[in-house]
Amino acid sequence: MAEGEGEEDKAPEEVEEPTAAASLEETAAAIAAEAVGEPANLEDAEGSKQKELDKGKDAYNRGDFKEAIKAWQCSFKSVNYILEKGLYKDKPKELQEVFDMEHKVAINIAQAYLKTGEYNKAIESADKALNRHPDSAKALYRKASAHMQLLNFSEAEEVLEKLLEVEPENAAAKQMLAEAGRNNLVSDRKAKKMSQKIFSGLSSDPRVPVPVREPTMLEWLQGLPAEFWRSLEDLLTEVRQLLAEARQGCWELARSMFQKVQALGLFRSAAVAESKTK
Image (cartoon, rainbow, N blue to C red; front, side, top):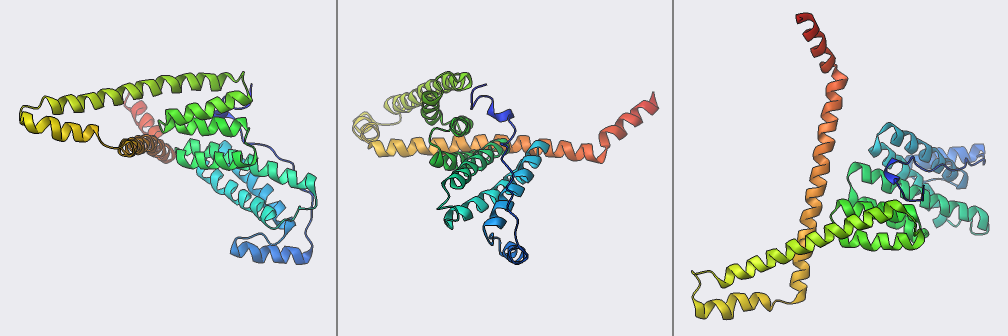
């Protein structure tokens, strides 16, 4: 399967386990640093990023996507600590491994945000991965998936075209690009019809006197600057995003309620009660 295809079902990335061991003093420093939320040294940062990465993977596989995000964000923080402190500035091989880890954690976080329906955050995480690896097929695919859920079809098309430059035979990207194109065309047609309906309604409104109707409202609207229409389009996009997020929230609430009912054993109790009445 090409990279980027079927990403929603893929498990998080595997990484190698670091082998460095901390001294007694370093361990004490690590415990003190943990209280303030910052790694104390290189060994502490290395151990933290691997521990949280594994913890996030386990949570993701259990379907606990929020916990996975929390763990991976801690891992990302450890990676940032290593980079910001320049701890591997004289070791290019190890530095490249940290760069690769940063990319892997970012695309994992993006995938988890897709699962929780936090699509704008998924785009932000994918962009972090793309800042390090601009041609990352997984990051591009997940960014495009988030744009599709937000009904940003033009943006999704742009990202998918970039992905197909990287992987021309990526079947999933081709399918999503075709879907984005169809949806974008339908969206444009609806916007055009709405605009025509507004203008036609103004020009045919019998309550508006003829001398006032043509030179005022209609011409004023037609003469509005392009910036106004762009702002209107942005507003409609935000509304679509809110609707998409609300839809995802409803599904999450329903699933949570169903799981709680299952945990209480109400379904089983009802089944036992029904069997006794027969």
